[in-house]
Length: 605
Image 1: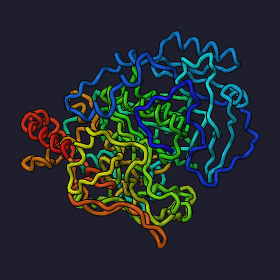
Image 2: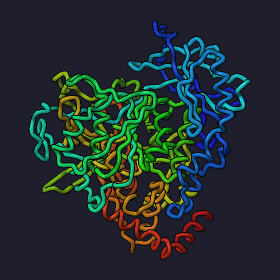
Image 3: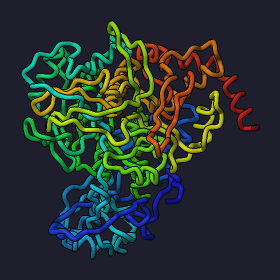
Image 4: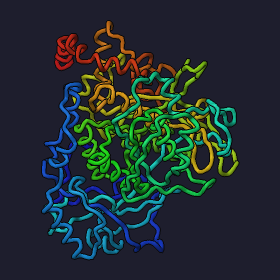
């Protein structure tokens, strides 16, 4: 796939790159199934009133991060929305061709239509099929689709003709116990300590005078669900107060938990994200966006959260993703457009880095596939418009973190549903991290991040940005789900924890912003001016995310007191970070001229 200009806008007068043809699949096979002509849904993306270049991008966000003027969602939704006349025209046309219109939203610039697969094929001049890639089932087509000329000027793109499964970043569970057991702190299951998000908020020194009140944290949930009575019991047992408000938002799917005691790891993902975020920021409202478990469902849920004028999330936690190479260019453009809008609105969207090291191999990877796969980062974590969260392992003694290193643990686990010991391929689970192959970074971002002991930073986006505990084999996260108690982890846990801290910071500062460039700005100030000791993040100087066995050795090592492509800038020291953000205007005023002089020298080089 060609390198992607993430500000590129597809031209609806041409066929769009939205097929499986370009994807990096080996062993992709098509298969006829009895469900081939059942109804399916896709979304038509309608041109907005503004041009793509009118939406701020990476250059804008990184030029002067703290003083960037964010817009208000209610005003910008009107500015960015689709023209109602264009929406009405497209609806009338697709209905005349036999499609049902499931929903439409000028603010989201989407019209969701439904029709039989044969009708989709005829309308878009493609052949949508079922494909298999190992154990994964994919809906897609080979060759590019076409937009009918009657609506060519109104429709920017089509999403959903190809649908990829999404990888969850919850680590395997350490074990479970019956839900009627008492809950000491920590809860110990199979010799492993389990803590709540509230406990980790204390370990990471979150500011205690704030609890996220007045903020809304969005949780993206693809498949599965939670039980309200079980959530209530969780917060009651663990003395979480106030009782968090949880709102369900349906984006083509509902809150659908599996059976009590059933084998449903989808539910564990949903419950983990909610319970960590809500326990660490109990004053915040939690809006859970339910969508189908595909890249299409993830995109729809993100778009809904960005333009949600009712719940107005200021922070969104995304614990899902896939290889960069498994997204079409068309899909990536629509994702990044939504992320750019979010950053302009003053939202911070946090995405997990993944759980399978620097290759992001999946649970069914063979040694041959791993060798072919090579180094990979996960999207949407690699987008320049999100805050990517990686994972660490912590040692806890007397209620404090006494040691922290990059998460990379030999791992096998007691499956609580089957009561069998299961092993992880290649022996370890580890934080994702590395460098994008798609997204170049702007000169403005380069000026912030290239102040390092190793100045040879590649031209492409590096992740993670930050980290937090993710290791379920030592001190994991306690979760109630489907009638059992689990200790689990993964970057799926670290991400909602960071989301909760972000909500507390927004509450304290009484303002909202795109967090990522501001963290790099603080780092740059501390490097150029040693008199400013950046204490808001704890650098991770030990460990790696190398995937290895006798045949494979791929990954990255931590750097001493510096950013690394496995630990990012480090884990949070919440109260110190808040204090430094409060001081940032003065820091900029005091050091601004020297910073500009350093940038001039960089430009000269």
